[in-house]
Amino acid sequence: MNHRDHPDLCDRLAAEYVLGTLKGGARRRFEGWLHGDAALRRTVAEWQERLVPLAEFTPSQSPGAHVWRAIEGRLRLEPAARWWQFWKGDPLRSWRTLAGASTAAAIALAVTLAVQEPAPRIDTFAALTDERAQAALLVTADRRNRVIAIRTVGGTPVPDDRTLQLWAITQAGTPRSLGILDERGTATIAFSDRALGRDVAVLAVSLEPKGGSPNPNAPTGPVLYKGAWVRVL
Image (cartoon, rainbow, N blue to C red; front, side, top):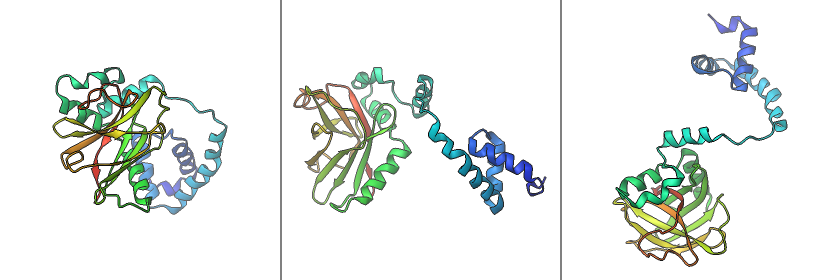
């Protein structure tokens, strides 16, 4: 069937496509038609102009718990209630699980923000995400000057009697403290080649007592944010 011979059908499919009710193979087939049909693309654009503004009158809704569980399952995330157990068993496997929580969207955000920085030179970054895989902190590094900058892009307020502490996690699963964040979740910290060497795979932020972890070699509080340490240059 040549879809161009059925304008009424094309109009109905375009409406369903914009609404999101066109699913599976039908949606993929329609998207294939779009590539080679400028008139069909205009029809889709017309339906977008009609329907998208209606979303302004629709109240926002939070996804149900089953949605987050499905996301956690696909990303192989550890449930938040068991995060305190990451020191038990295989630490490398646990930290790799934490690193897997960095979503493509968070990485895209980090790249976008990083390239917008006028100075210093940014060659490595981490987009730290929360338990819902939402971007919370951006960490960028200037290896030439051995300085890392941390700034918040989300996250939650920190209680007055608590401190956020940044950790570098090696490929062997060993944590190294990089420093303390201020009450806003930001900081500029000098680092050594040993603290942030090429063996670092993950950055993480834990919630600690005021002043930092009582254990200088490991977090004692829950890990709130984490993300893969990515070299871009």
